[in-house]
Length: 167
Image 1 (cartoon, helix red, strand yellow):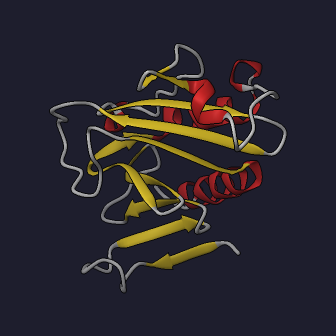
Image 2 (cartoon, rainbow, N blue to C red; image 1 turned 120 degrees about the vertical axis):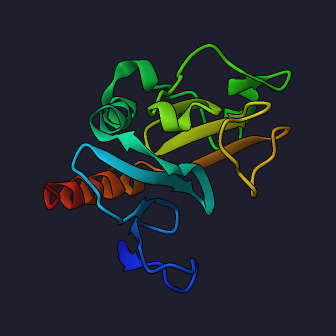
């Protein structure tokens, strides 16, 4: 079920919008948004990555997610839910392939995104001494999550629909 709702119950301000599903969504700071610059986080299975403290350049952010969904360089049909972490993270370091950029508001993280036939696998590792504050994330943990390709495609489409309504 797709969600486009105010996050009044989860945040104290009514100026936040969530677009997507519980599995994969974007939280947007809806104060003077512009089509090409939006403050947002990417939420994967309840974990939020990125920051609302600075805007993200949306053309590059969307381009990186489209590349993840479509480009051969982000495809590995040998990965499964059972083996993706051990194949993408060796000795607590993220591998050299499948890196994501997601724009500068995500620069506090090393990021990997790769897909098989049905799922997208994400790994995030918060750098030591990050520029922004992430009270719910630790620098010592590699966050490994997987979601369906459909959930990312759907949330991205809804995000682009939302951006189309902005000046």
